[in-house]
Amino acid sequence: MRFQLQCQRRSAYRAVALIITLASLAGCTRGELEHKADAYNQAIAESNNRQILLNAVRASQRAPMSFVGFGDVAASPTFSGTAGGTFNFDPLGLTTYNINPTLNVNGGFTSFTMNNLNYAAFAQELQRPLSPSIVEYFDQLKFPKELVKLIFVQEYTLAVQRRQRIASEAAVRCRTRGNQRDADICAAMERDRDRFYKAACQDFPETHGTMTVLNVGRDLCAMVTFQTFVRQLRLLEVELPFKPRTSQAILYYLGELIAAQNYSTHRFLPEVLIEKDSRRLSVPLFEVERAAGTVAGAAVTVSYGAETFFIPTPVFGSNEEARSLQVLDLVSQVITAATSKDALPRTSTVTLVQAR
Image 1: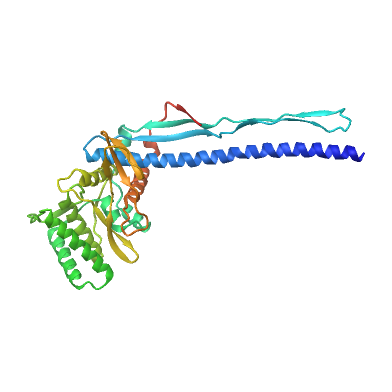
Image 2: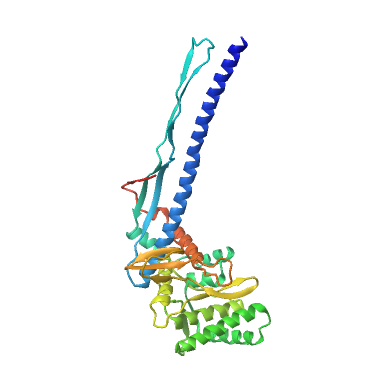
């Protein structure tokens, strides 16, 4: 009797062990799916960054932009296997039970959708002016104040007399420099002014009652003029109404920043004033370089016109950290928010892609 019970226990333990083994294998499916989700997340993020950079490069060469939308992905885990066994629960061998469970799972991304967005409804969404409140929103998210203004503000229009008064009051403030904040902002304006004159830029007198301060990045003279005005407003803690850009205009602006570094007569690296450790520092705004071949270690890389354009990986945490990736993040959020789901095309075809 004791021998029979021991045999039954051993057989039962084997059955339980087999069931546990199968359960653990089934648990692998969840791990595989989570891994696929992470891989898909990373792939879409990288593709999105490259699409923004590629369209900015096209804009820098005054070439047409092109857009695609990444749709749903069908994925399955990458485990495939079988398990089986024969167990005798009867000590005399009169009764035999066969347990042959099988687990088969195919792996990889089985399909994904890709939409062509080059049509009227999507273009109209990109050409819709953004709400001025978007500046306040990103200010609340603690994005650098000047960076937000450079990306979103297309122009200021104001009376010439008020423009002159703002410049005069800022000059007085810079002569006193009562605190570190004022000293940093004024020092940045002085450096920009030096660059302005070294590039043989000129101030042209206004002949009308109103004037427009236009925000462009391709030309150093125009960019310094706008940045100086923005810094004067910041120094005096004054907010003025402005004309916001469209999402498409933001991409054109990024193209201007790329052109400034690569094609302009007087090449320069556009900078932005950021706050770090209670100081205001000038750092690269949107740094993009080009090369003839492949580039290793870049944060984002695209190929266009037989050349490689890339964003160097910023030196994170340093006082010279470029804000290129932060600009991509901001632009990505804006384009996503500006293009409603109804503006996206219906998927008519599905392309199968096996990826193991």
